[in-house]
Amino acid sequence: MSELAKRVAFAVVAIPVLLGIVWAGGAALTILLAIAAGLAASEFATLATATGSAPLRPVLVGGAAAIPLAVHAAGLGLWVPPLPVVALLVPALLITALWTRGVAGRPLEAVSTTLLGLWYTGGMLSFAYALRHHRFAIGAAAGTALVMFPMLVTWVTDAAAFFVGRTVGGPKLMPSVSPGKTISGAVGGVVGGAVTAWAYAAFVLPPATRMGMTVGAAVASGALLSVVAQIGDLVESLLKRQAGVKDSSHLIPGHGGVLDRTDSLLFTLPVGYVLLDRLLSLGA
Image 1 (cartoon, rainbow, N blue to C red):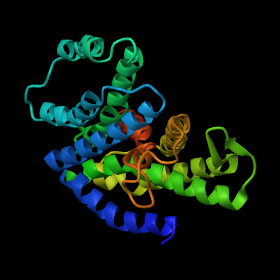
Image 2: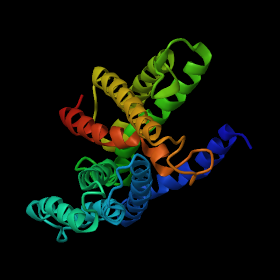
Image 3: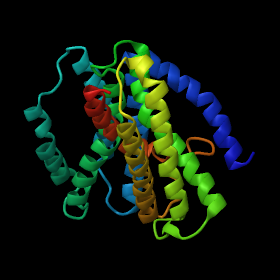
Image 4: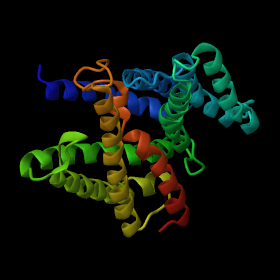
């Protein structure tokens, strides 16, 4: 089976399951995000270790998985560590590095990559939960529609960039980071993302959320999300290039690792949250 066929087969199975979990929200979505965050954090730790900056893996993986759980607990009104307690994570990690790594264990890099990985994986993915249970999400349909807005724009951007880049070709976008990406593909991705956002804002968001967005705001949001999605993809490519690997792992057939599949979403989910929070509140 070709790589493209593997991707299509995986998507046919995964997308309906993902939609069902997003629709359910709550604990189901929390568990999915916690698992995805933990796996992505583990892959990030492997990439960082390959560069000589080995993070504190148990803290990174466990902490990344715990962030969606904490967000869910906060949404239920349960106790979560307040900000002063969370701030103690930094000195706690420094003390841990002091006793477990020493000078030869590169403690500065260990603590820095641990903190970066925590937010890059668990923190960014948690915005999917924030969108699903946004104050505008009155009901499962509304919450699902909000989550799927940045996700759909991301997926269309990826597909449009791939096919336009293959068809048109031309100068490379950033060959030192991702040799296969072209400027024409990037432009095609932005156009695809803008059109998708316009159509989604016109035909999906109003009936699902009973709120509106102007045509200009929708097109601009789609274009911005498309740019951000492509930057997220390039950032992960940069990390893999430094680590000297093609994929973050081989967990998903035809797709590489969890980090490979979520690299763009790690950027578009928080940006999408901000855009929808601001633009839908203004309405149209």
